[in-house]
Length: 245
Image (cartoon, rainbow, N blue to C red; front, side):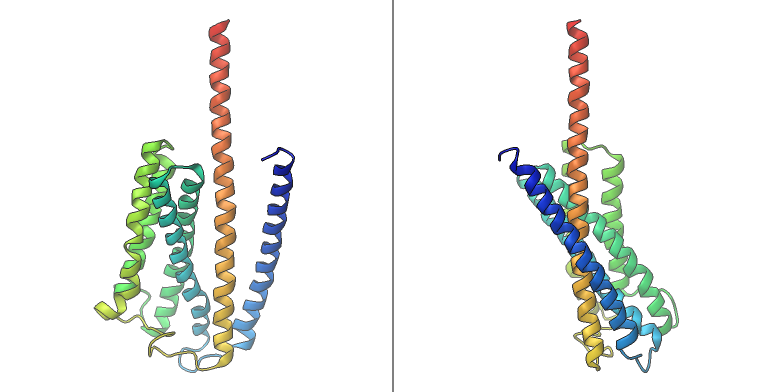
């Protein structure tokens, strides 16, 4: 690619990224309005039911982050590149962030629904395990170095973590438990049209937010890798100069 074309492409990508950030900010405002001002208060759960509009999309975003980590890890095993490694690492970070939101909002909702903040419900337990797997991934990447062996070991952990996703999803059907299936089951449902609109907006807004987070983190990781290699080259050149002297 000609050198003059690269800055132009980069500036277009920057403009697109900033435009999507502005769009998502507007969607967040619209979503908050729909959740708190348009959607009615649920008769049985009361105002606490509003947590649902953030809890469920956050769980979905945790799945997206885990899927990104899985595909990035598989891609890295097939053909190691900085981009695939960065995508896997960004996915793990997204999975941890939104998994933490799930584990905070879930007990707040459970305290009203079940009378306790935490019960070792199958879905709660497997969700906690999922977050711990990706926390382990990030700890490994932070403290075990950034060599080829460490990256491949982390990729293996990223692939292993994805195996828990279907277990989370089907845990309620397979092992019963108290966790409701509000959208597809008989756990209460969304009777009012404004409730459905608020939930749909939450999904759209959170999904775009995940895309932006992945995009931003991949760019940061790639820039960090380029900087690390430039520093290594500078050190090598310095050593070569001293050897010649």
